[in-house]
Image (cartoon, rainbow, N blue to C red; front, side, top):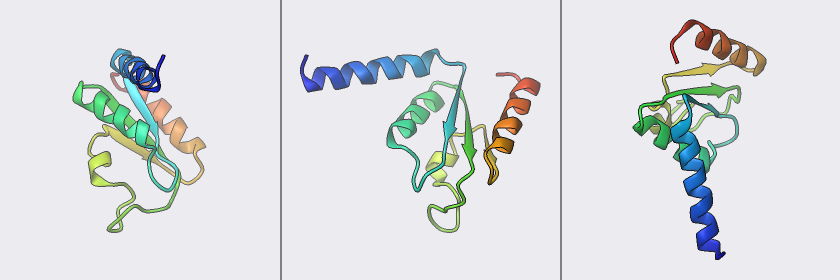
Length: 100
């Protein structure tokens, strides 16, 4: 299998898994969001999936915003805190109280 074929196979499998998911949860920590996860977010958003973010990293992206608006706009809700545990607990509680 060529590198191009392997790349296409990985992409198609990943895309299929995103399309089969009920929701997408994106961990937004790091200097910038992961490029592959951004593609997954776009696929999920365009296909009507609910998208949730978890952000515990306090570094900003641009213009004093903690996320790029093109990424932030895809999320149903972003759970933010500085310790991570609270953000995950808040997401779990939100999902238990709201329709997927």
